Length: 132
Image 1 (cartoon, rainbow, N blue to C red):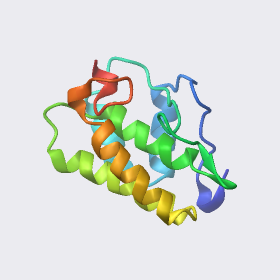
Image 2 (image 1 turned 180 degrees about the vertical axis):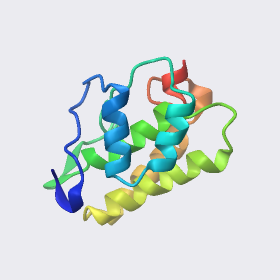
Image 3 (image 1 turned 60 degrees about the vertical axis):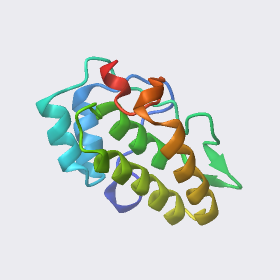
C-alpha cells in the first residue's frame, strides 16, 4: 500500500485486468470512473505509457502516479462524452502533479494534454484510446 491507503500502481506497459482497474479506481476515489468502465469497458486492454511524451519524474518528484490515473481516464473516454469530462480529467492531472510538489510542471502538463490529448489526433494517448 502507498500513502492514504492507496494501492501500488502497475508499471509502464503492464496490461492491467479489469479486476485490478476496479481496485485502483476504488482505492483512489474514482468510483464514478469505475462505474463508467464497468458499464461499458473499452475493447482494448489498458496499459499506461506513463507521462506520454513527457517526464515520469522531475527533480526527484514521481509524476507517474498522476499520469497513470490520467491515462486510465483517457483510456475509458468516449467520443460522445461531455467535453467537460476530458477537461476535468486534465484538471485533475494538473492538481495531482501540483500536490506532488510540482505546481509549475502541473501547469505545463495541463496545457500539453489539452492540445496533445485531443481525440481528433487519434493517437495512442488521445482521449478514448481504449476504444480505437
